Structures are given as C-alpha cells and as structure tokens.
Length: 535
Image 1 (spheres, rainbow, N blue to C red):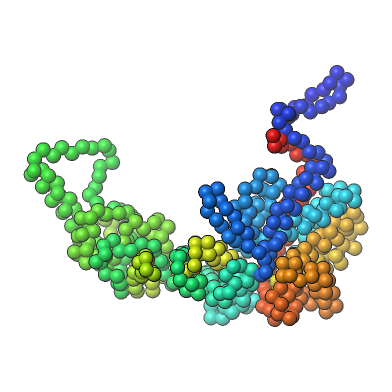
Image 2: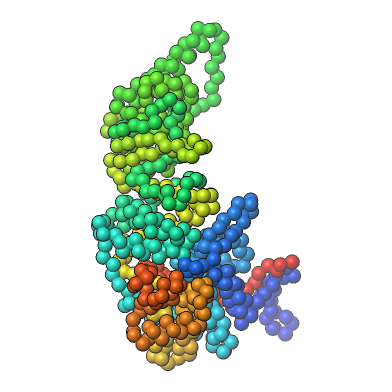
C-alpha cells in the first residue's frame, strides 16, 4: 500500500495488485466482520447443553469425527475468513486454559457481536460500544465472585467433585455413563494431584482406548497400560513383585558410528565373529540378571538371538516401547531410565507389585498392565467402546472432566449451571447500567441482553419455548433474589440447580466472559479490511 498525490495535491492510496484485492472500509468492514463471527457462533449454538446436537466432520483424507466439543468442531473446520479464525482461536484458548466451556464462549461472543451490530445501527461509535462492553464484563465477573460458593472436599469425600464433573459429561455423547466416568476422572485427578500446592499435572494421567466391549467397561488402572506384549510367546504372562529394568539401549552387538566393512574370508573368522556376538548377548542378559531384574522393558528392538537367550534365561522382556510410555513407567515404578548396560545397578530398577498381559476379544490383541507400583503417581484411564469414533469422543469428554476436576482443586469456588449464572449476571449488569451517564450505558444494556443468549440457546436446544422459559426463570430470580434458578433442560420439574446438581467452576465462567469480551472488542476496532479477492 502506498500514498500518492494527484496534480492538485489531493492524496490517494495505491494498492499493490489492486485488481486482485477487495477493500472494505468503515461501517461496511465492521458489518462484514460481525457477520463472519455470527456465522461461526450459529454453527455451535445448536450443540450447547445436555440436549445439544452433535456435528459430523469429514477430514481431507476421509476420516470422520463426530463430536459436540466446541474446540474440536472449530479445529476440524476449514475456516478461510480471518475473523472466523479469531473465533477458532477464542475457543482454543478456552480449551487450553480451562478445558471446558468451549462451545459457550463462542455462543457468548456471537451474541455480543449481534448486539453490537444493533448499537452501530443506532449510530453509536464502535469504540464506545467496546468500552461499554469492557465495563459490563467487569461488573459481570465481580458479580460471579459474589454469587459463587465454596465447595469443601478432601481425598475421602470427593462427591462435590463428582457432581461437577457429571455436569460437564451430561452434554456429551457419553451421558448415559456420566456417573461412573465422572468418578473415574475424579479418582484419577486425586491420584496425581499435589493437594498442598493445589496443582495437578495432567500429563501423568494417560488415556488409552481399545475398540470392543461396552462403555461401562471403562476402568481406572493405578499404574500404566502399555499397548505391547512380551517379546516371546512362551515368556510368563504374569510376574508378581516385578523388578523392572528400563533400557534405552538396544539388545544387539555394538555398531561403529562410522561406515565400516568387515571382510570374512575364512570359516574360522565367521565362527569367531558369531561366538563374539553370542558372548556379547550373554553378557548383556547376565548383566540384567545380576542386578536382580525380573522384567526388561526396552525402547528399541532386539534380534531373534537375543530374544531366544532372554527366553532361556527366564528373563521376560518387552520391546519397542515409546519414549513417553517409558517416562510414565519410570515415574510410576520409581525406576531410572538406563542408557547403557554398564550403568545398570539395583537402585535403578523400578518396582511393581504385578505385571500381567491381558488379551481382548477373539482377535487376541494383547496389552501389558503394570500395577500396584511403588509410586502410584501415574495412572491410566482405559476406555472401551463400540467403535473408534465413540472412543475418540469419550477421550475428549474425559479430558473435559479431568480439566474441571483440576480447576476445582485449584480454585474451590463454583457457580450454578443451566444458564443460572448468566441470568444472574444479566440482571446485575442491567441494574448497573443506570449508574453510567454516557452513551456506554446502551452498550452495557446490550451486554446484559447478550448474556441471556446462553440460557436462551439451552432452552431452544431442549425443545422448550425459549423466550417464555427465559422470562419465567428471570422473573423468578428477580422476585426471590436467588441466583440458583436456571433452565430445566432435562425436564426434571424444578428450576433449582442445587436440586438438579448442575454446577460449573467459577474460573471457567469468568474466563468465558473475559475472553468473549476481549475478542469482540478486537473485532469492533477493525475498520478497514484489505483482502485478496475471491477471483
């Protein structure tokens, strides 16, 4: 883009390759951006809540994903428009930070954009709208803090955690098993949580899936699950009180790093070489036996001769185990990863109460369970399901539940779900609007109206009359001044979310409002769009 002047001194802008570019300015640019943002929000709106619909997405290579997780839907969609990409980023940042509420945050941003459009039509400047939104979001976040409640729990009494995780899982495809899956997620998080520091490292929870069985067969293993089997079919399938050597060096003769060539011109030389190799293997296996190892787990493979020797020496072994799994096994068993045979000592062995191989179904697919470990800080959630898509969706749902449990350990405050928190905030923001004398109060009222879009979408997706249901709940909250009344999506017969046990984490809700406001402010401030034309 360059600035030039004509013969009368009037400035004009020259765009490079301008025949291939389109340009939108001023109110047209804002309208186009708002339309793009609303289009993305409209897609996700129908998958909000326990009665939300799922989306089916086909990837470029034909693989199909069925999900109603907002972040996954937007990740898989091929979005060209830059503003729509901002909405994808918005959902992703909610997923990274909180893990849950990825659909709600996009619906919220879409509603804010819709309301902003009305304010722009009234002739209010976009900057004033953005400033009004900023004020309103501050009021909403403070009000959430006021209406939140502290949840007390400990390692023995984790029922509050389970109830909150069940709220997350109720909007997923796995909601028929939400109780058992929520318990599994909470137990897994508590197993690896550092309650003193209020910190949870989710990397220590491994989520494995295997097609077959029912969703009800999903189990929590206090140990590690490895998708491998013993290297020799005749090795023992169960080892109790195992001492595990974790190796990253291969079971094979040493190879020089440089290019080399061995000339063998007589039988004697060949015999010598063979004996040397055999002796080398012997020493390796003996070294493992000497330090007291009863199981060898190796990152690399080993040839048939080494396998045969290990079998003869009664030393079970597992080969081709991935690096991440090796690290988890080392953490769980308290062992050390050994890079050379010379460094193998009894102190570096990991200890596990039981190592067993288990086969599944008629296909005889086998997996290795390492249980009752010395340090049970690493756990595995093993998911079963009818097909691959079901298992993938369950993994995503479990991830959301794990994140919710982690957030509650970090911050024990909760607010009530079912749109109750949004309605309460909407009333608070509406009441606060009168205190602001400027044009901003229109924007603050618009923010209050946008907050109602989440309970409205919940009612719509549940097959209720949206406006009628929302106004009934709103008047009930106002009359009794209780922020627990939300939309009765499951048709239980009560609007009281305490009775329905529908809870959400406070930090998740606050993050939703703040992130949505930030993105909408950013979109409103754009007044000139220069883009490549379609043709």
